[in-house]
Amino acid sequence: MSGESSQREDSAGIRLKNFHITFYAIVLGMAGFALAVQKLAGTDGSGIAPSLEGGATILVYIALALFGLVTLGYLAKAIRYPAAVGSELRHPVKISFFPLVAEILLVLSIIFLERSLPISKGFWIAGTALQLVASLLIISSWMHHAHYTIDHLTPAWYVPVVGALMVPIAGTAHGFVEISWFFFAIGIAFWGVLFAVVIYRMIFHPPIPARLVPTLFILSAPPAIAFIAYAKLAGLAAPAGGTGTGYAAHAPPDARRFLPSCRER
Image (cartoon, rainbow, N blue to C red):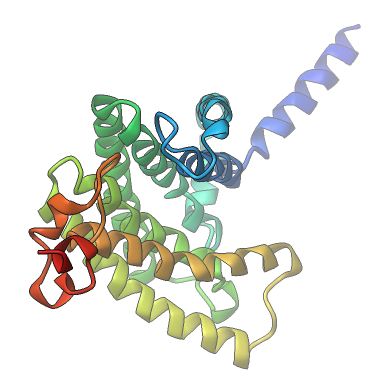
């Protein structure tokens, strides 16, 4: 009996040790899906598919539950196998997935803009702080590296950039405009640099590993999120539940002619 118990403990330990940071990608996908459904449903029947409002709420709670479970699992790994976490931090590919935690918090802050502003602000502050720490850690790793090669470069390196571009979406709604511009500038700068390097790697070097092929979808994330972020920063998008007329009054002069509320004046 003691032998079987020991084997079960060893098996559980191996599974925990192999609980990689990439599991947070599942949570980010669920949170993003919940946000998309919430936008379709709208609030108080104002969306394209108001019948989905209840489903959106369920998806939000599922995302929160998954976030809690994955965080508990990774904390258990960090306590029991700190060397394994350190190995992931030093890994040339896996290190790019650590900002996923910050991105999940930022997506949750966007979701709760239409549900609870204090909760949204709490998620935003936590996510922005973690994004700053992760950005400094990863950029420092890139610049003081001793083990990176061109073969380590994949679209997964865009993950920190996407997180920086997400900050303004909820940040402007909470009044943190300067901080939002700061992260927007970082995201735009590194997006351009990484895009050129990733395309160079894909054309002139061996293909990325098959298991990382799905990360190619990340290439579409920076321009899409950057557009939304700039619309928020420049006052071209309406606040949650708004009509856009308040933002139109402060829109740049060259952009006002594109806004119906300004043309009517």
